[in-house]
Image 1 (cartoon, rainbow, N blue to C red):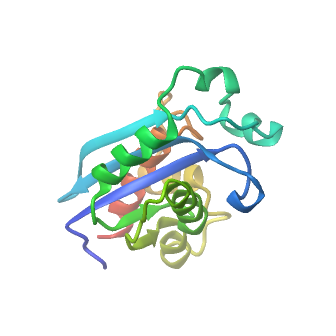
Image 2: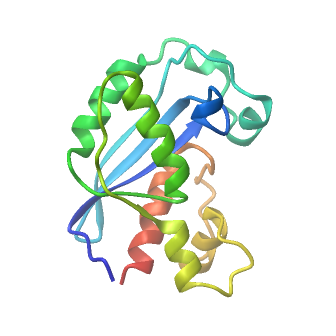
Length: 171
């Protein structure tokens, strides 16, 4: 299919549903992939000064208390920008992740011109028979039972899982 040589698979956990309504990235997880392998990882909670919507907290379990003492946004986004470089970025529901990532970078006067690919869209194209295309559903279909150590809706775990999905679909 696309056969990207080196790419980044990324996931974010957020304080709300949209950056236009004050939502912020509170956790970032990303893995660098080369030749069908995860070769590097990047992940951290972010000490963002914002409230976390109760529905978002219920999904990912990240509270304001957990963000205290974590790296500040500028430190995280500069390190993330260095990690991804000019590589293409894959995300499961890339429109959502890209909007948040670009918003965070723009607030700091940074730019993110990386090309995005969507594992959600690819799964819908390749696996139209699935009842839904949530990360866990697609992963279980392609990879079998998920290990008990997987913590869905935490950024680095979801990025790793999305990378495995992308690798399986992009054969």
